[in-house]
Amino acid sequence: MRRPLRPLAALVALSLAPALLVVAPGSAAPLSGAAPGAAPGAVPGVAPGAAAERDPQVPKRATAVGRGGGVTSVDPDATRIGLRILRRGGNAVDAAVATAAALGVTEPYSAGVGGGGFFVYHDARTGRTRTIDGRETAPKAIPRNAFVDPATGEPYPFTPDLVTSGVSVGVPGTPATWTTALERWGTRSLPQVLAPSARLAERGFVVDPTFRSQTDDNRERFAAFTTTRKLFLPGGRLPKVGSRFRNPDLAATYRAFAKDPDLFYRGSVPREISQTVRTPPTTRTTDLPVPRGYLRPGDFRRYEARVQAPTRTRYRGYQVIGMAPSSSGGTTVGEALNILEGYDLGGMSRAQSLHHYLEAGALAFADRGAYVGDGAFVDVPVQDLLSQEFGDERACEIDPAQAAPKPVPAGDVDDYDGDCATPAPRPTSLEDHENVSTTHLTVADRWGNVVAYTLTIEQTGGSGIVVPGRGFLLNNELTDFSLTYDPADPNRLEPGKRPRSSMAPTILLRDGKPFLALGSPGGSTIITTVLQILHNRIDRGMGLPQAVRAPRASPRNNATVSAEPLFLERFETVLEALGHDLVPAGDAFTSAAEIGAATAIELGPNGRLKVVAEPVRRGGGAAAVVKPG
Ligand code: GLU
Image 1: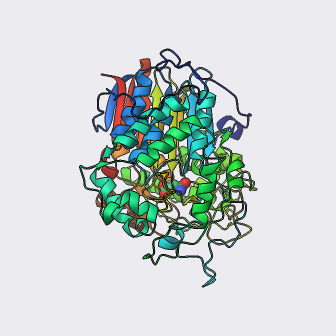
Image 2: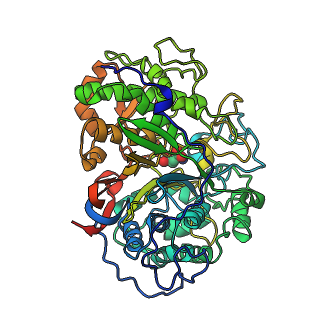
């Protein structure tokens, strides 16, 4: 089934061009009184008790078709707030930041100003795609053995000890991501995009079963902190489905941020966060160990959201653009696609195409574990990992009749030529966390600008620690580092470094124009969710809603492949006959046997958009377009 190999240079390019300062079109109808591209802080858009919004509610619909721009997220309030910005002439960047700010209110366990994320932006006017790495950084003072319990000499148990701690908190990158995106490519001010979410936090949102069950899953951790207990378990009780959840502290934090774009990096907030992680506000009754952290205000002053070039590869005529390190999303999705490129997956049986998908995922994860870490600290061979020749050589490892024993070793990026020689085995590390934390939103505007943005506080509920009086949870992102120190490990813990991420906001271009933008939550399963949706859509010809809805399996080079119940029902027998060991998805952190909760937008001819949210997983999301029909 394999096609001949193709020349390397023509197929893969990782643009290393310096960041360009570009301003998107989209200033046609500014929000009340604001100049397009106004500097953050210029417009007092966030006023307590501002007039009630009259926006129509966004129904919780998984697919919306139409024109004029669209927003899709996991939450109807967030989608509504993003859509409002588009309706009033804001561009995709403005709407993406506004939607993210709303998710900080309604999805406080998945995302917020206490965390980080990755922002991919395609600018229609210039035809360029730029990205922001808004990942958290480790404190300057963190020791190599920070994750080792001095009492035992072993790493702390991952959960709940390490997860629920000050030691796993990194400098939040989300506030800097928002200000950087707006300054560079937005047309609305920070106060303007934060205003609706400040009001939402003040008035509250209606508690749904997902919010209640996520609170329940975190009950012991949240009860361990006076601040968190007070906000999320008032009176010791879970929020009732249908009740209104208000967060006036967060409303005040957003308003303060609107006035001071540096709020999170200079002055009192860095001091408060540092104090909180160094002396977590534990309750007297908790018996969780809550290891202390090392953050100091200087870590915040040094923080920078990195505007950087994306990863690029080609797949069946599409240009696939993703996040370069510190995320492994772009290299791993791209490499897996290169591995699959040589096969006629559409012409295969469903079982055979899935077999190839599972094997390609495992091979790309082996290389991720061996080579990918924060590019500012380790030399990540991005061009090799994304070279078609390397992918072709890795594809030699796929036996169409039999799954390889897992874990498979990594390939050799110093020695490849696309031929099927046996690679020198290289050590790799394994990945097994698959919590359904994090959130992904996708936005397109009427000018053809597109944003794919994934943001997180890592665990569902992050570190479990709410900053006193501020209304948001701190991340526990540093648990994405390897827990023990090995100098050969690209993801070893180092001061100032960003832990390796799996977030994979991705944009596909066809003939230089955006065709598809997508992403998902789900820890390391993010990579396979994005890969599987692309496989479904491009190789199997599914429509986008079906490609997103289809049951998933997540090959990550472990001995077993986790899969959703419907996937097991349909494919377990045929895939086990090929040697795959499938197990139900879910781990110690997750009560739902689900993988991911994607959102995606497909851009058709004449400005026609198909905007898709997750229909079922995590309670389903909300897709909306400016002009339906
Ligand atoms: N920390 C994860 C990552 O960056 C995302 C959190 C999650 O989805 O579990 O890969």
